[in-house]
Amino acid sequence: MKQSRMSFWDIWNMSFGFLGIQFGFALQNANASRILQTFGADVEHLSWFWIAAPLTGMIVQPIIGHYSDKTWTKLGRRKPYFLFGAILTAIALIFMPNSALLASLLPPMLVGAGMLMIMDASINVAMEPFRALVADLLPSDQRTLGFSIQTFLIGIGAVIGSWLPFVLAEWFGFGKSSINGSIPSNVTSSFYIGAAVLIGSILWTVFKTSEYPPEKSEKTNEIKKVRGLVQILRDFAAMPKTMKQLGVVQFFSWLALFSMWVFTTPAIAVHIYGAEISDTSSDLYQDAGNWVGVIFGVYNGVAAIYALVLPAIAMKIGRRLTHSFSLIMGGISLISIFFIQDPKMLIIPMFGIGMAWGSILAMPYAILAGSIPPMKMGIYMGIFNFFITIPQILNGIIGGPIVKRLYDSQAIYAIVFAGICLIIAAITVVFVDDKDDKIQLKFFNAKN
Image 1 (cartoon, rainbow, N blue to C red):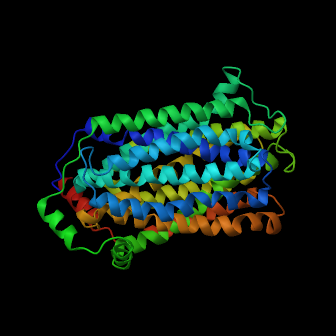
Image 2 (image 1 turned 90 degrees about the horizontal axis):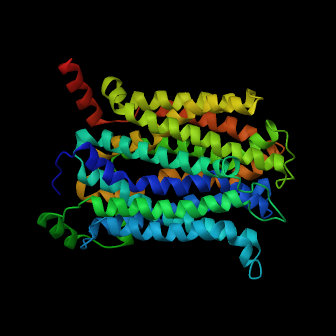
Image 3 (image 1 turned 30 degrees about the horizontal axis):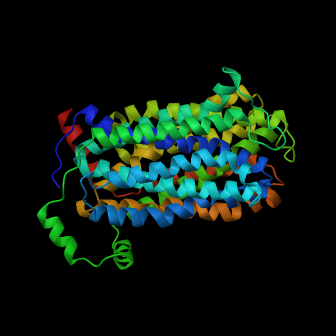
C-alpha cells in the first residue's frame, strides 16, 4: 500500500471519529463505577465488573485486526469495522443507565454489567481499526503527528464527555440526585448525547477519508497465508523486538490507568469529601462523582493540548525520553492526590496526569508502527492490545480485594499505587529499541 504525505486536515478528518469514541469512553470511565454502585455493587467488586473492558479487548482487537488486514469492500478496509462498532456502542450507551427498566428480568446490577461488557466490546471493534488506519495511510515521518492529532481529538471528546453530567446539572438544571435507586437524569441524558456524538463523528471520518485497495503483491501474499486463529498465533510468536519491549512499558502504564479509572470516585468521595463508602446514593457521594467527571475532563483537556506539542518535543529529545518524562509527571501527580484536602486543588495533579495520558495515547503507537510490516499493521495493532488488557485483567481480579482487605476499603491507596506504576513504566521505556527515533534525531541534529 503506497503511503504519501497527507495534509493536516486530511489527517484531522481521518482521526475525527476518535472524538466520538472517546466521548463515549469518557462517559463510561467517569460514571460506570457510580452507576454500578447505585445498583448495589460493593467497592470490593467494582474492579471485577471493569474486567469486561480489557477481557473483551483482548479477544476482539486481534480478531478485528486480523480480518481488517484481509478486508476490502466498497466502503474500504478499516471503515466497515469502526462504523459497525460505533453503532453497537451507541446502543449500549442508551441502555446502560436504563438498566433498572429491565429489573423484571434480571437484577439491574447484572444488566448494567452486561451493558458495560457490550459497550467495551463495541468500543474495541471501533477503536482498533482507527490505530491501523493511521499507520496504513501515513509515512513514518508523519506518524507521530498522526497519532498526536488523534490524541488531541481523543482529549477533546473526553473533556466534553467527562464534563457533560456536571454541566447538565449545574448549568441546565438536570437532576443530579439518585431517587429510589435510579440513575440521576443528568447522567442518563449525557449517555444519550454521547450516543449521538459517537455516530456523527464516525460518519464524518467514513465520508471524509479515502482508503486505498491493497497492492496486488499484498493480495497474493494473503492467499498463501494460513487463515484465522493459527495465523494470529503465528504472528504473536513472531512479534518484533520493539513490540516486546514496549509491552513492559504498557503493562505498568495500564496497570496504573485501570486503578485510576476504577477507584478515583470512591477514593475522592471518602478521602477528600468525607462521604461514607456504604452510602453511595448520598448527595455528597454524587457531588464527588460529578467533580471526578470535571477533573477527568481537565486531564483529558491537558492531554489534547499536550498532544499538539509532543511531535516537537520528540523531535528534540526523542520519542523514548519524551514518553518517559510524561509518565514521570503522571506518576508524581497521582501520588500527590493523597496529600490534597480541598477538592478544587485536585485540578493541579490533573495537569501531570494529562501529560502522561496524552503520551500514552500517542508515543507507544508511533514507536511501534515503524517496527511492523505494513501488511500486518492491523493484526499487530490488535496483538499489541494484549499488553494493555492483561494488566487490566490482573488488576481487575486482585485490585478490589486488595482495596477491601489490605487498604481497609480506602481506595486512595490504589491511586498511590497507580502513581508508582507510572514511574516504573517511565524507567522501562528508556530501554526500548526505536530505530525510527534514532534516524529522526540524527536528521534533526544534522539540520540544526
